[in-house]
Length: 256
Image (cartoon, rainbow, N blue to C red; front, side, top):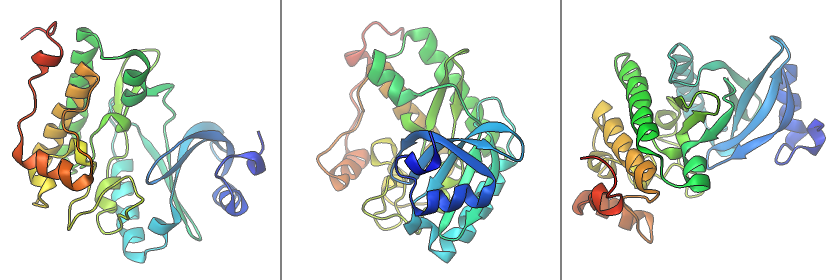
């Protein structure tokens, strides 16, 4: 597939694949923050997942600087349960970063395809993501957007890898109504997977990530989101005021 035929890759084929370093192969997916492409790094001759952020994010100078700082911090990580960041790119109105290519699917895709995870896989998932968070928190980095869409499951091994470290923090002052990250005051993240302190706009730390991991595990175990609502505001209120139905009520076969 040529660059010109790639879905969503206009604007001179993403400025000629960010000024000549990459050859875009095909689109892997898109979300509220941007589009991910399968790309070849021509400099290093390897396939990568190239995430190109939406122009409304990249055009804000404050966000641009914050994004570059945070993503470069994430690029220093080396952990088997974190998708590595290889490079951070700038080209005119674009910001992008190249990640390791994980052969597999997101946790959200897996559950949608096959239903709740078996117990052994569920335990492995929670362990793997927990290890990744412990590593990041030990280096002073909070993810802020742990959710099924940000966890990759490697097809060959079943290993879980967390992606998009640092990106949510970078988006704090740039979230828009159309974005995947929701801003209400200073609330940034995905409402269904927020801790109460995050939902209320308070300062968050590593404990908020662990709470989000619990909600992610709930989804993996039951195939259902623990907290739902007809609007962002209703979901946030429920995060603050309502108890989550016990997992055992939705998945009685799970051991206590």
